[in-house]
Every structure is written in C-alpha cells, then in structure tokens.
Image 1 (tube, rainbow, N blue to C red):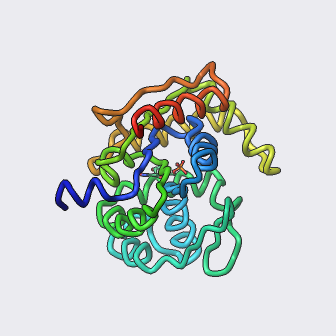
Image 2: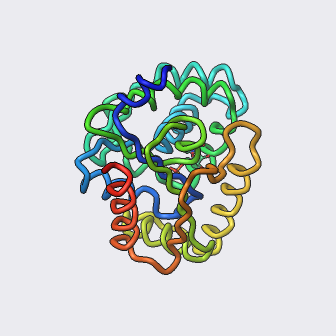
Image 3: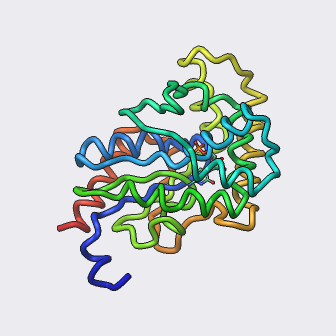
Length: 226
Ligand code: C5P
C-alpha cells in the first residue's frame, strides 16, 4: 500500500486491552458519537469457538479451525450477532466460549483466516475496532490507538455484572481465575499477543466512568483529525 492510499483509507480508532477492560462498551459508544462503524473482533474468535464446539472440532486442529473461520456465516445487526441465521449474542459470551475463543485465537492459521474479514469493516466515514491486536496487527495505520486497562478485581466485577444482567449465573472467584487465565494465554501466545502498541495511548479505567473514557477518546480523536 502506498502512503497515498493509506491517507485515503477511512480513519480507524483501534481500542485494545485485556478481557473485561471496558473495550466493548467504550468502543460502541465512541462509534455512536462519531457515526462510525464498529468492529467487535473478539466476537469473530468467539464464533469460531462456538461453531467448533457444536461441530465437535478439536480446539487444537488448526487447519480445520482455519477452514471454519474462512467459511464463517456470521452477520452483525446492531449489537446482535447472527450465526447461520441464529441469534447467538448471549451464547458467545459464556465463560466456556470465552476460554475456547482464547485457545483458537492462539492459532496463526485462524488469525490469518480472519484478517481480511476484519479489514473489510473499514468503510467510510470511519471505524472503531476493538480487540487485542487492532493497533498492532490488523490496523497498524490506525489514526488513534488506545490501550485500555483496569485492575483485575475491577475487570472481574464488571464481567460479573455483565453476565448477571444477561441472566447467566457465575461465581466471582471462578470469574477472577478465568479472566486471569485468559489474559495469560492472550499475552503469552506467539502470534499477535496482547500488548500495547508503541504509539498507543494508555488509559487506566479502574476509577473512571464509561462517559469519562468515551469523552477522553473522542477528544483525542478530534484533536488529531483536525
Ligand atoms: O474481546 P473478547 O473478550 O470478546 O475476545 C475473546 C477472545 O478472543 C480473547 O480472549 C482473545 O483470545 C481473542 N481475541 C484475539 N484478538 C482479538 C480479539 C479477541 O485474540 N483482536
């Protein structure tokens, strides 16, 4: 890609961070405020994991999982996730699917299979993309890169509330353990590990409200865009 074509690509705001750091809520709200498209890249890994579980594909079978990822029949309708015509928005949020998603996400062929699909979300007037490698791998030329963190306790508390609101029963101690395990897996994997891009802005959201974080991101974006 030439510098010129990069300049002409619709702008991207990349928001990365560990599990339950508030990326999803913040990214959706920033997209709404700016009138941008929104990509929940984690949902794609979750959909691959769910489909693999349903079809009985081993989570270590990289080639079968990559083929599945390439053929994934998934659509996003607002905040709803549709898999082969079925609404699976809540199903993909279970802890079992979260863990399986983190395992399939460690496989290079699966990541490669999902790359073009993620980049296709970049359309005018712009895109807010959230995940683990938006700023490092998928959109390295993003106009603004944000890395969100929060303390482990605060992240577990947020995920607990999110799951309970969806009517899913979980124990807080299981959740703390599972989030820590998923973060370890995501940080230590060889391909596209979770890490802050060098040019990303770090925001610790532990004691910030969603509104505070959204305002900070939008202000930074506007100051760069003008
Ligand atoms: O963001 P979310 O928690 O829904 O992501 C589920 C899992 O998908 C993560 O734990 C991570 O392993 C994987 N993922 C990834 N790269 C992304 C987004 C998610 O590896 N860009």
